[in-house]
Every structure is written in C-alpha cells, then in structure tokens.
Amino acid sequence: MISVDEARSLILRNAAPGPIESLPLLQSLGRVLAESIVAPLALPPFDNSAMDGFAVRARDLEGAGPSAPVRLPIVMEVAAGFTASSPLEPGTACRIMTGSPIPLGADAVVMVEQTQEDAGTVVFARPAAPGQNIRLAGEDLMLGDRLLEAGTVLTPARIALLAGIGRADVRVHAAPRVAILTTGDELVQPGTPLQPGQIYDSNAYAMAAMVAETGAIPFILGVIKDDREQTRRLLEEAATYDVIVTSGGVSMGVYDFVGETLSQHGTMHFDRVAQQPGKPFTYATLWGKPVFALPGNPVSTMVCFEVYVRPALRRIMGQADGDRLRVWATMQEPFSKKPGRQAFLRAVIERTPEGDLARLAGAQGSAILSSMARANALLIVPAETTHLAEGERVEALTLTSFHQERTC
Ligand code: AMP
Ligand code: MG
Image (cartoon, rainbow, N blue to C red):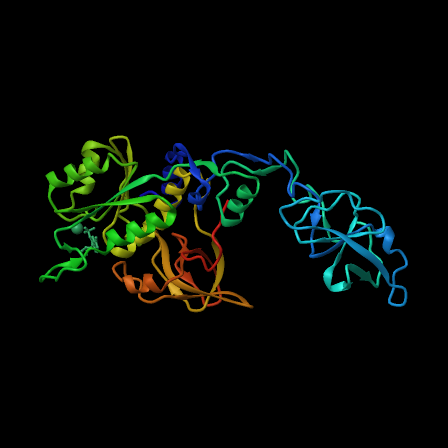
C-alpha cells in the first residue's frame, strides 16, 4: 500500500499549473500571479505632505520659539489632487493638505496643530527641520522595482499594491472547473423527507464547499446510482470538466462501481493509501482528466480532500505549495493506535501564551461528521507511531484560518 507522502508527491507531480487568463483586479483575490510585476512608476509619484498644515522654507523658521514666534503670510493653498500655481517665495507659507504636492521652494511642513492662524498669517513657535513631514517621491517604490513574482497569491494588500501602480487587470492562472459526483442508492438531497434506509447527501456539499474555498469552481453533477452503466455515463460527463472529484463507491462492496470504471476506462495510479481515515482513496486519470475518487465516509471524504485535492487544485491554480499552514502543538491527552497507517486526528488547537495545545475534537470514527465540524486542525500521527503521550509534540494541519493561511 502506498504511503501518504508517496501519494501526495505522485498527485502533485501530475498537477501542472493551468492556463493563464487576464482578470479585472477585483476578481483576482486568492488567485496566483502568472506574471511578474515591475513598478511602471514611482510611488508616491511626487513629493507630498504627510500632514495637514503649512509648507514653509525651514530657513524662515530658524530661531523660532515661544518668546520669538515667526509670523508668515499665507500666500497660497494646495489641496490634495492639485498642484501649486507658483513656487513658494521666501518669507511666505502655503496651506497644505495631506497628500498635496509640495510647492517648489518649500522644504518642510509644519502640522496645523503646531501653528496659530491670525488674520491671513500663520505663527510658528518652534523651528522646522528641512524635510520634516514630507513624503519623498519613490520612498515606497521606485520605477523599475520588482514588486511581485509570478506564483504569488493575491491578497488584499497585493491587490491594493497593483491598484496603486495603476493596474486594472492582472494575469493569473485560471480557476479549474471541478465536477463533483456522489454515489449511492441511499442518498437523498437535503430539503426532501428521508425514507427508511436513506441518508442525506452531505458529501456533495462538503466537496463543493471545499472546492469553492480553494478558489476553484464546483459543479455538482448529481448522485450516481449504484449502477455500472450510470457510473460510466456520469463519469464521461464529468470528464468534460478540468478535474473530477467523486465520493463513495471505491470500497470492497459489491455495488462499488467507481474503482471498476476507472480501471476499465482510465489509468489507475493507486487505489488505497496507508492512512486512517481514507484508506480506499483512489487516484486515476480518466479520458485525460485527473480523478480524485474519495471514500464515501464523510470524514474520509473531507480529510482526503484537505490532504490531496486542495494542494492539487492550488497547484493547478499556480501555487507551488497549496497546503494550509502546518503547526506543532502539544497533546493534552494521550492517544494510541495500531502501527501501519498514518492517522489524521480531528482536533481543536487552542492558542495560548504557553503555545498551541491540542485536544481531540471528539470520536474519531470516519462517519462521525460532528467531530469534524468541531475540529480546527488534523493532527498527523506517523504510520509507525503507536502512542502519543500527554505533553508530546505533534504536527498538525490547520483547517481554518485561525492561523493565517500561507499565501505564497
Ligand atoms: P461507500 O464508500 O460508497 O461504501 O460509502 C461509505 C459510507 O459513506 C456509507 O455509509 C455511505 O452511506 C456513506 N456515504 C457515501 N456517500 C455519501 C454522501 N454523499 N453523503 C453522506 N454519506 C455518504
Ligand atoms: Mg456506496
């Protein structure tokens, strides 16, 4: 049986960055840059005031003090968005707003709180240092600076930076269209009453929500009945999308037709992984498309998605390492298991001044969705480890953004 690490590296090797598209900046949040960005202008583009106040020549305020105030006439005003009509003459002051261009001749700004206005003049009771309260052209970035490399995830601050240099569109990797299929005669859609023996199809919702969270585009194609012919037909339809994700039908039951269809019509890369939960996880290529056939048990579905599908989708979207943040936490209770399979334990990690503390989020059966809903992390227990003592350090894959997600 293949190990978790082998399965992941095989999947990631096959997941190449997808096509590039140009998007309006506002639609690019979370996308990955497919171009490197060089500053086409300096920022700020001109020397400007950091304060509301008065632009002066510092030399005019030499020797100013409470007992020797300097009084200058206010000869002009520059509001933000305008420029001074003429240079500032010696012995005069210019009223200026934050962000307004510094008039030629002025070399300091005195904040309004440190001045007193009086009948068309302004009085200064302290000297000014040359350059004070002036933001110099290019102090944020210079023309030609390399700002963002291809492969960078677009965060709000990076989108702001792109807007700040005048970009309205940006080249990013396209979001893959992901076909979602669930399998099982027992499945009923939420919103309809359950008959005996039936359950609601929660995996379609889990998978669609997780796909959407990666930034890819989910398409729920529906439920495949436990029927060989329908399995083939719906998988064929799914192969018109970029990526196929299914749940169920890959175990040893006599009605599990997904695995059979994949090996008959596609290339099976592996059909089980040494892990708990999620052992029957199957990965194949079908009619040229990657298929992630996740096990049907709801927690197995979600864990396999986090561990395999999420990083693959992010890589297709251009992000080299699309895992969520991994952290180390301290076990607050012991845990034991058999050797042979890597375990992913649903846990709640609490961040404290003493470090990150991990507790199990509840029962760990692969059909127990309530503990998955409580968890904010998956603890990673290596295949050969049989016991974790209370106080032992354990690696964890975070599930929420309580630890900021990696962004590049
Ligand atoms: P299977 O892999 O098809 O044998 O399914 C394993 C378990 O997961 C069974 O108990 C199924 O009823 C359950 N299951 C399969 N698909 C879903 C689904 N879409 N939503 C909720 N539970 C499911
Ligand atoms: Mg089934």
